[in-house]
Length: 130
Image (cartoon, rainbow, N blue to C red; front, side):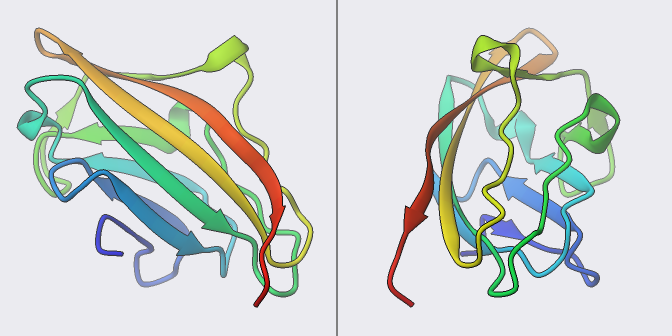
């Protein structure tokens, strides 16, 4: 899905908030950066659901630390103020079992010029036939 893609090295997850409300990725590398694009397009609350499939070899991870996550007004040029807040204060930890599927949801609620994202884990470790 175009809403969530890796960059050339497949270590950056890009979520374009203006291109729908769901996306799906398969982890080929560890995700070391997450970029929320087109935050300016969010004028009301927007929820984005992401299906993350673990690599066939397993063991890939996602970094959700503050330094790894950035909010952008457009496609990566102008940054916005905002943070990701996880339900219960605990970020998602990707299931490391080969081909496992985790579902994560991100809800952006703009407040003035601050674009905070509230995140929750919908489910983890789904065994989906490949």
